[in-house]
Amino acid sequence: MVRSTPLPLRIAGKVFLVLIALFMLAPLAVVVGAAFNADQFLAFPPAGLSLEWFADAVADTTYTYPFLFSLQVALIAAVGAAAIGTLFAIGIARHKVPGSGALQSFALSPLTMPSIIFAIGILQTVSQLLGGSAAWILMLAHVVVTVPYVVRTVLGVIARSDGFTEEAVRVMGARWWQRYWHVLLPMCRPGIIAGGFLAFIVSFDDAVIALFLRTPQLQTLPLAIYGQLEFSASPTVAAVSTLSMALTAVSILAIEKIVGLGKVFS
Amino acid sequence: MRKRSAEPWLLVLPLVALLLIAFVIPVARTLLASFTTDSAGFTLSNFTRFFGSSVSLGASERSLRMAFIQTIVSVVIAVPLAYIMAGLSAKARAFMMIATILPLMTSVVIRTFGWVILMGPSGPLAKIPGFLELSQARQGLLGTELGVNIAMVQVLVPFAVLSVLGVINGIDGRLREASRTMGASFVGTFRHVVLPLSLPGIVSGATLCFALSISSFITPNLIGGAQLPVLAGFIYHDATVSNDIPFAATQAVLILAVVVVTIAATNRIANARMK
Image 1 (tube, each protein chain N blue to C red):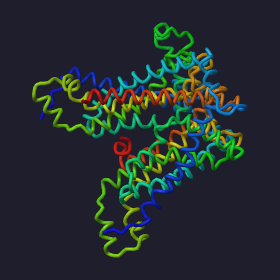
Image 2 (cartoon, each protein chain N blue to C red):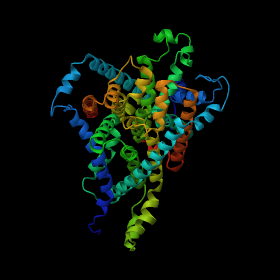
Image 3 (tube, chains in turn orange, brown):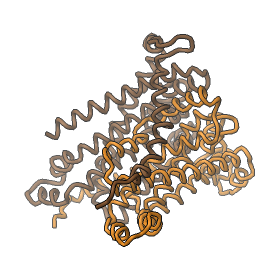
């Protein structure tokens, strides 16, 4: 066993980790701190503790409507991405599809395309062919950007499971739907759920595509926050942001519990 | 033997159809739109307009410069971070994983909001003695390139870390041990074993950071403001406010071209290095 990393280096490593963790988490912590601040101006560290900005946030339709709309968009995008992405992953992993490598890169390609380029394309297509933006278009665009996450997580889960069960069930004369319902889908379930949660977070937090497709009716929560920041930030915005982060954090913990973050993100 | 059936195609088709209709067509239309104007058919006038405008060129120069700085800083942070993370205990690694992924998954708008509070003239950073003098930012870091760079690095680091971590985790641990038992120092092992082997991850992480940086506008707009326009900010403005989609598309295509060239160049360098 080699375990002779020199002590000064080990200490330097620890300090480095702490500094990076601080750097990464500071902007989030500051928003949470500002949301609980008793003072009526944005300040950090907080002068005293208060929940009044949360009460404000929950009562203010400037935020509640966008919140509900974002929730709706993200849920539909996640379900759509989970369904389409899972079918694709099963098809690629369980059958000999010609050109499967190319198909897989194609399925993941929305991840590498800068979203601003996709957003302009959608905006242009929509305004020229469909006469304007609509909620279903935003949802569809979010399915496109989130579906690669589901493909990746489900493929990852299938890769770690054995193919014999399915083969056995097939040989034993199971109908196609029995094969899917009793074997394939349960086998993929951790990947489907983790991918679905990821898709939900990505859609819920997206601002770029939503900004390009924005109309007065299509106002998502990140846009409502962005609009307030351009104008002037208030503690109420901090409270709204904190609630939104809480939802994200819960989803991440769920992913960690179901499949483990390390497996999903690398 | 399995018989040939339509089953695989039925499984694969929905996603392929979705991407063809809702991804390939929009992106192709962006490319095409850059060669049109409202009046003329095929034209290069958008490009001549772009390269004839000192405002556009100035913003491009700034975007490129900041993307380079941010990418380099992000990679310089991410590589040792991933290296250390790979050797941590399960618990410490899970914490660092959350510390990287929680910000990654938080809306860019909210993270930037945090930086706005931190960097404002009355924020905590401005209270550090000597900080403002050192950064030559009397009004806090808002409206400075340094401010935008700091906030953007926080956005980009997770992407770099995850790319590098993927490769480092794949490196056979015995290689490191062998290097150590053969007498190489910790740093020597890092330099001669881990670094070369994780080059593919570093390259893909760097290109990802660069592509994300040069096409982002929310953080530059909120922190840099109107004094520090970036190319992607112009794109957003032209597409949604002035309704000049062809010109917005032109600038987007130029960004895409820069990204593609960068990916090709870095891949070349990485391949040459690994031979």
